[in-house]
Image (cartoon, rainbow, N blue to C red; front, side, top):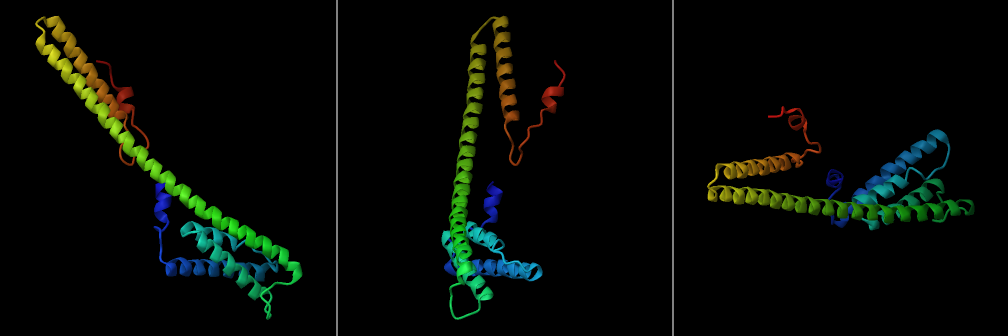
Length: 201
């Protein structure tokens, strides 16, 4: 998830970058739409919608709104070259629906970007908390082993010393297992072959 966010530009961007790149995205989508229309003879809006969504994810809803307006203006100018900026009556409903869908996509795209940023921030926070927790667990294991070592030195009987030494060894084994089971940097899997295939002593 964090890698996906790294692909997006950091915010905020300058107004020239936002609207310049958005204009370029819309022009590319519009050229694709004209090409498809020229080949098929069918008028369609669908190739402009990804550009609106992409602009709103890259930057913000303002860029998505701008992409919607620019897409609508380019389509009207290309399809109905006349003095009026309004399409003929039979095309009015499709254009209104296109504008509404474009505005909805702009809002959805920016919302998805914000949700992604919050999810990445929460993931980083969870990783920090997990690191702190594991650090404290390691310290607790070391403290238990040290207390048992001190107890071993204070007793006289050999049987008691052996029992404390065995307890210290077991605490250290548990501490080593805990360290082994922690995911390492850049690893999502834990290699258990050494634990499972090791021969009993």
